[in-house]
Image 1 (cartoon, rainbow, N blue to C red):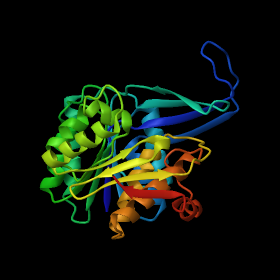
Image 2 (cartoon, rainbow, N blue to C red):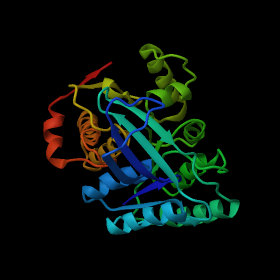
Image 3 (spheres, rainbow, N blue to C red):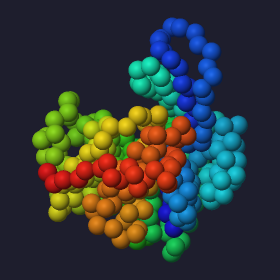
Amino acid sequence: MILTVTLNPAIDRSYGIDHFKSGDRYRIFDVTESIGGKGINVGKVLHQLGHQVITTGFYGGYNGQRIISYLEQENLPNRFIKIESESRNFCVINDIATNKETILNEAGPKISKDEIEHFLSVYKELIANKECKWVVIAGSVPQDVPESIYFDMVSLAKAAGKQVVVDGKPPYINNALVAKPHLIKPNKREFMDLCSMKEWNLDKALEMGAYLINRYQVKILLSLGDQGAIYMDQDVTLRVEFDSIKVVNTIGSGDAMVAGYLTGVMEGLDIKQVLRKATSFSLSNALQKEIGCINELQIKQLEKQIRIHKL
């Protein structure tokens, strides 16, 4: 069983607009709505493939009830904690003409100390389950939650004998590293912030990756958007590249990559095969309108377009 944690779930709404321009008025006919948040997206893909998944986090208000209703409708088990404040909205404006995305990302609800304590008690109960082998902690953190929350969750999961994957932003991912998770999955911007890099430099990124691996005994899967990905561990550094595709939506592609990585690892594949699967999942998500969704018929064809070599 895989436990996914989404502290700050959202109603995800995507608008397709031709030649979007700030200050203009638009009547929108191309609208896609889904339930999201990184951990939920990972769980959706894994559940789609038949893996046993349970997901947790916070939910509140009308939006929160819609999130729970969706999970129940999809038969995706959850132990979300009800809060007083309203769960957030997440909006993406896809410019059809330029293929550029504008993201409007609400900060999320305020969480009380009692609500945090309730969540952690449920979290401890979930990781105590012997069937739970992996924990995925992913996404943003709502307001008033302490910066130590990712560290606390990783530490508790590791003490319970679980493998932990973390996909989050600084400072939460920085604190999570201290607890030594199995893998972190930052994107380029998150990795630059994590390593205090003011501009992208591949050699510097590899140097910083090696430092993090040596210090925290962690594996790193660094997603680079249309430039592919880099995988680093104590034994090997691999570059992943692929043929260009006509992207429909990039949101959730990193989450699909995490789901693909876990699927490959659980199938006992070697690391190149794992990365091929992870990348094909990511590309498939980018070809769908719905966030956190893959087309299983596309996967084999997409895998053929992926190239992996040592750095």
